[in-house]
Image (cartoon, rainbow, N blue to C red; front, side):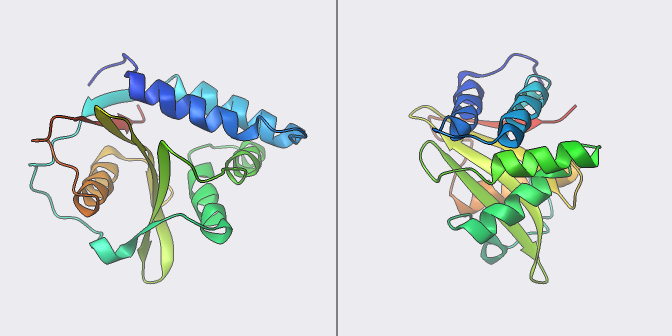
Amino acid sequence: MTDTIPHIAKIKNQWLAEQVDVQYPTKESLAGRKLYLAKAEQQHFTTLDTDIQCESNFAQEDIFLVDFHRLTVMFSLLQSQRWDKPEEQELIVEFLTQIIYSEPCQLYLGFSNGEPVAAAVVTTTDDAFLISDVVVNQASDIENCTRFALSIANKLSLNSSSSCELYLEVTP
């Protein structure tokens, strides 16, 4: 595990930060961006080994690309649980619901019994993949987050044997 921020993580953070660079951003979305970026500086990174054999709670058909607003709201609500204070959670929801779907990032949700229970961001560059902002069941314990990240990697056919680096962002 490393504290060094890989270049792909900087790309993801910049992409997210730019989501509220609009003509009339709300003060809440700007405050949410500030909270998000502060937390992003505290993250650690590890290489994700897709050869790990672990039991996954998520079948491929339970993982969905976030590609319309209702799913964005679900994604944002799950992500907000990474913050402790309700007022911070509200700001994060305001910030993340502004996301416009574009490269190099994609948002994913994992469902269980029809309910959204996991979320992550996948960032792609020519030489790397990053699975970040992983939250499972309103928590970010490393074991469940790694399982969900591996499920996403499997769904997207990302593997450790490719020429691209595959990183996982881990909340300390």
